[in-house]
Image 1: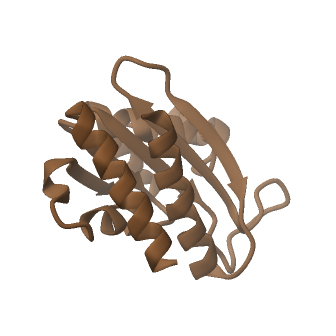
Image 2: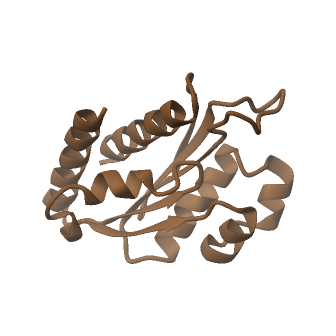
Length: 160
């Protein structure tokens, strides 16, 4: 897994540098693992602008401006919240591109409509539409978190 993350982060960095862009992360269930994968690459200071870890709903609202109404209507684990997180990361940073991750890594916390392993992503690029996706990962907490990092990086690469 470490080699796969490294290769994805390198590929992301190459694309960002080629376009003169920088990325920001907005993470909940991954707790900074996306930013860690990026900053593990030497020279990433050229293309990594900053990371936000907004684990609580209060942090999502205060730090990234997620509307309370979005959380009330859709919940913290939703594509709507992922979109708001990604846009908030762009608005509150100097980045050109962002990724947001919010999900239920487990082993507890799931519900009938939102089971453990459900992770929502948002990818935003200045001047273009924000894209979102929901994925369902299997395995324990660490497996869900690691799979989420891979999906987040792959999504960023696809945006570029």
